[in-house]
Image (tube, rainbow, N blue to C red; front, side, top):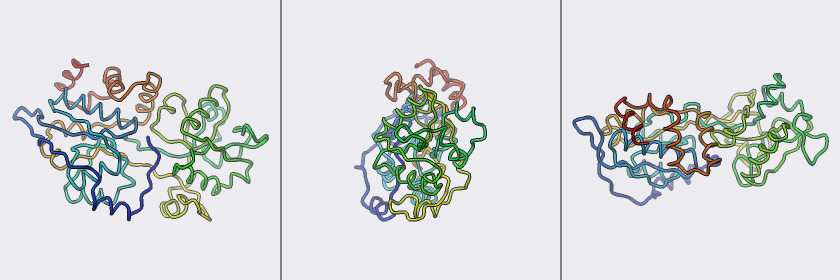
Length: 344
C-alpha cells in the first residue's frame, strides 16, 4: 500500500473541474444472450502492489471465466477516481482507498454515475502501532498502546540505553506526522521512550526484520496489507480510545499540532468501484465483482510470496488462483471456475 493520502477540498475540487486523465474511447460492455460478457472492459492497475495483483486477478477471471476483453490501464487513487467520476472510465477500479475522496465519490454513487461493488478488503486498510506476536504472546497483559508504553524495557532503543523505542515512518510520509503526534499525545517521552527515525520504507521494514531475527522487542507504526506483515507476524495494538475524526484531521495530521489528541486511526474502507455502464451491462461479470473480497491475512501472505520471488502482478495473481481455490471459487459461477482453472 502506498502512504496514506491527505488532500485538501480545494485541490480536490480543482481536480474534479479540470479532470486528471485523457479520454480514451472504449467499446461498451455488453452481455450476450448466453449471459457471458463480451466487449472491452478497462480495469485500473493502480501503482501499489496489493492493487496491482488484484487487478491481475480480475483480468484473469473476467477474461478466462467470462469472456471479457480486459485492458489494464495505469492508475492512481485521485486521477483514476476523478476520471471515473467525470468521464465514466475506466470501467473498474479494483482497489479504491476511498477515505480521501469520500464526499465526491459518495455524490457520484448517489447520482448513479458510479457504484460500489464488493469491499475489496473485507477488514479494511489498517493503520496503527504494532508489536511482534512473540512479544504479545509472552506478555498477554499488553493489549493497548498504553500497556506497551508501561514497558520500555521490552522495546529497547539501540542508541539510547535504558530507553524504549517507537519506530516512525520515513520523512515526508503523512504517517510520520501522525506517529509523531501520537507519540506526544500518549506522553511516550515521559514514559521512557524515544522516537526512532527509520529513514526509508526499506529502513522501516528492515527494523522489523532485524527484531524478528534477534527475537527482540519492536514497537512502531505500520499498516496492512503489506508484504512485511505476511513475512513477520505482528499484532496491532488497540488504541484504547475511539477514532476522533475532528481531533485527528484538525491537529494530529498537522506538523504544528500544539495539542495532539489520543485517537485511534480510522479504518480505511477499500471498495471496488465500477461505472454505471459496467454495472448495467456486465451481467455475471459484475456479479463476480460484487462478491470478490479478501482479507488482510490473505493479501499479506500473497505479497510476501511476491516479494520473496520478485514476482509482478500477473505472477502473483496466477499463484493465488492456483493455490487458493477455496477462497476465489465462491466468487464465480461453477462454469467460470472450470474455465479459469483450465487456463492456469
